[in-house]
Image (cartoon, rainbow, N blue to C red):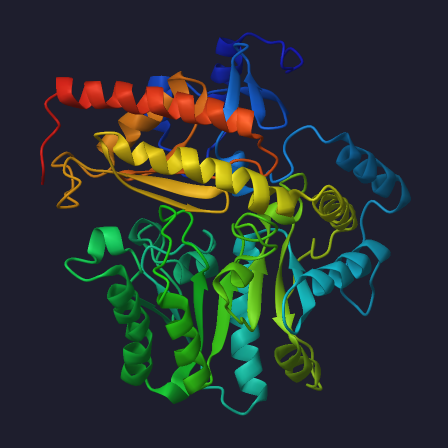
Length: 465
């Protein structure tokens, strides 16, 4: 076989990919129809593919490339660390400097008394860790029956057995079941499920489902509640203003642990270092990944409050949990450099003071498009709800996701990466995006919406369910 490089013809690369590469969350049959897109380079908010197209990445990879592509500083740090200490584990009463430094830095950045970090290689692994942390905590406290963790329908916490069980997506549960002791309540999606209620009343109603579920199960059996500050993979569902304060009140009232999944919302995405700060949440555990290294290395973790860390640390026996790559020295060193760049270059301030205000002006103007019923935006994560009737918040009569998929395909054709979740179009661009690049993103999004609207009309799909 010839050496495989970016310079091979696209068709040859596609054939090799089809023959040997199993893709996540992908139908091979659908992939065979359209052909895989081969990405060969990236700089800032831009990607290049094997056909020479220059693509604006409205999704920052998978919500993760916060500082943008092509930052050579991170490559230099990784090379230095590989030469100095390429790997060692943190088992057996051992540590190394990059893990120490990163844990200390995260304790400095995290709000409240979140001062302790258990490292993983991804958000999925970190959420698996959280299950064990919760159950071990209550076991040491003499309440081992408090095993149940309550989560939300349409929430996403990864695709491992633990993370997938915490998530509330039926198609993930159908791919292999879920573990015991996980219960789900409704999501705070006012557009789809709020009916005639105001967003504020709906937010309270959905939050109070937590209290109802606690009482149904028994407060002495519930260990924790987990939720994303903003549901990301579920469609960028921004909760009503009343939602998180009521969730906090209920967790406090019943003494259950509150886990906020910040895998997407952490490290500047919402205009603060963490989404918990944006929404005024006081978590006991915070899940982190993605923006921690801007995707340059696989790393994640659980930032844990003093109480939990001290209780688990007080036990005579081990906390029997961990990963080969927990606190990997190269990943830790790269994450530290990523945090330095975010901090010293004022990128979180840029999101709050420059990029978000300008994107908000341009993004919310898309509500005038005939196919857009709602625009949502927090920091630099946003969604467009597609509908055939804005006034009634109607769904399309077509198969769920068909209109969104058509719109996504038009985005791809126009060299814009914008995802769809059923009939919601979502973005999460690199945090370094400039106003000029936002103009390009909006222009291409508008063109794609126009083309999809014409296609929907032409195919007779402009019908309400």
